[in-house]
Length: 107
Image (tube, rainbow, N blue to C red):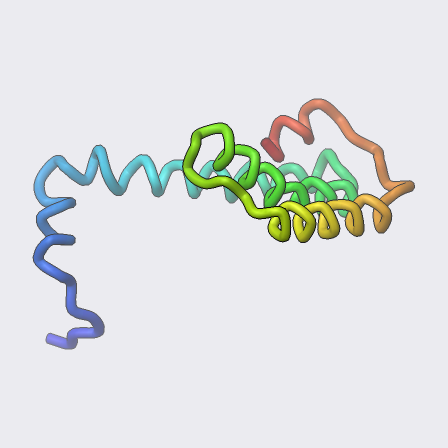
């Protein structure tokens, strides 16, 4: 038999039996839902507005990290994220056609 990769024993143990229901299945289901709703959002929102929402991802990550106490963002990280978000907002200034359904799908 052909072997393309070697799987570590601890990885096999983590998903052995019904354990995969608690480990692999939720990750796969969330990934599938994210892909489906992300693509469906293009039916309800303009391309520029979707790009602007995607540009807010680093800002959301920094905020969640700070709220959960995972890490304190540095000033340089905050400024970099601010510049990314501000640049994207300026780029799509006139493209603010949005529907509630489209916004929910992007969330």
